[in-house]
Length: 264
Image (cartoon, rainbow, N blue to C red; front, side, top):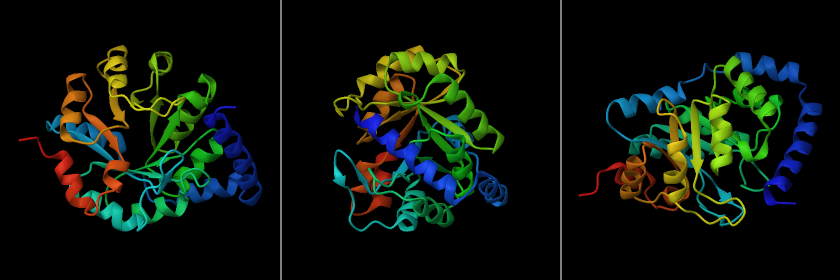
């Protein structure tokens, strides 16, 4: 069993447990009462139209490969720092077993800022999409490596009905072709190899040409400096998801500003 398969198996068990604790009908009521969605993809499109780079700054406490990333972990403070530094959107890891995340982190982060927020987790069931809206998410991440096309369609439709954007993540050419065939308009290219956990920015350069030019593309993982953004832009990608390299900085707001500032 791969790490991803192990994570998904545990996630399905957790979802089954949550369904017993909070029935879907109750969750739907909570979602209906949640603060209205903030436009996630539209915020990125706006920045691109203005000639800038769209930055999705990520709040991530830990990862399976790196362990604890930041000891003084305060989601509202981090979200505010990202906003002050010029981030376009925010991503929050809510997976507990592998990333030490929590739904409460997203709730607290979103309450501290005006930026739209993505829930980053292993979403496999419509229940989790409704749950995402109930905790205030404006967008959700779907990992194509973890779901089949039928599930992807169902989860995207559920998110759409709730007013949320869906970032569909791909890792290789097969997944990119699936995303395009599914008519996904918001696609993230993860530069991390799921098998080896190694990172290679050439992944974005290799996969971007398979995507029609009218789709919103995001490059994820392995981005540490503005020159990396410029390199990805030459491949046609102007939006980026950055987490660890910012989370490790003592001054997160300044690090965010520096990342977005053109290289002299």
